[in-house]
Length: 445
Image 1 (spheres, helix red, strand yellow):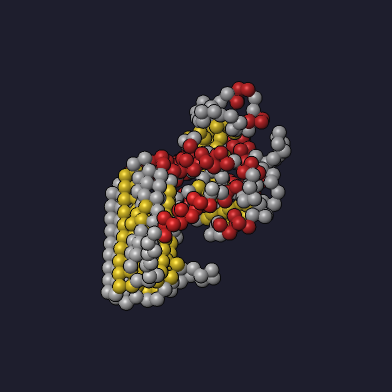
Image 2 (image 1 turned 135 degrees about the vertical axis):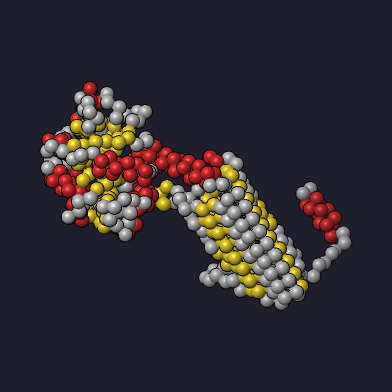
């Protein structure tokens, strides 16, 4: 579609969120909700996107920096907010979508339907997105005539009993002819119960001017407005349901889908198996034929084809897991490259390291990468074997094929194919344990 502009209203303080953070910056799947909406809008290839904020919303303005910013100096209603964007839309005669930064789940297909309806219907100035909720509550109502044209939107506070009985409700989302937008907005007044400039009044103004108005229906789920923490959790659940369904449709197996949590940008290959309780943070890419076992936590990581992860593994930002790698239970990897076929099977911490191809890291191994001030690299060569309960004090290099004896603390480089071992000499004192117990027993009498 061409000749489309979007105005996103994001000036609301969101007091019901009980937060110092602007409402539209609260996250769904690790991404501020307003960016979900702008991502959907981008699918329409709009000529212009204008985000309307309050004056003190620097964080929102920074997050949407690729859009034009318009400032609503006072909170005087939705019509007043759209008026703040008029300067940015000067001379634009295409379709203008009016959207809300706290309604992040609207689907691109629905926006297409609205624009197509406005373009198809003669003299249509406004198309409103309606829906039929199970509980109409205090939503504004869409009033239609016998021909199905939209004649008015009546806010709940101004509606009589007959109007409140209408089941078709207003989502607030509109597609408006750019040629008529300014004249309709300038005609608004605030003679209503709240003393605000209602955007909804443009429907009545358009009809009185000899123009027509129409509506299309959307699904209740996609029109959820997020005004408090409970609704934020509801929106998260809806988004997670969509992402799970998409993952399975694209060839991933989710053994217990409702226990798997995705980020907005999680990428899964085909024939990936995800066991219960797995959590994906932002920036995770998973190759084909990977199995991620139960209760693993992943963020900022890439996983190569055929790898196995977990159970109870933690992959932190910068973990690069190559093909056929095995990361086992209670293993934490941070900012490290684990090369093809390497194994870190249990109870280990690998940070700021390179583990060469086919290397085997024994249980309880840790890379001591931090001295309290700086981080240092541990480099383990291909085919190396690190014995259990080894501490590798970085910076240190273990050569290809080297073996490190169990229980060692290694602080110097070990050459290729060498045995590195560092232990105190073993001592045995015959009878000492019995004498110790006897002594303790006497002391308790």
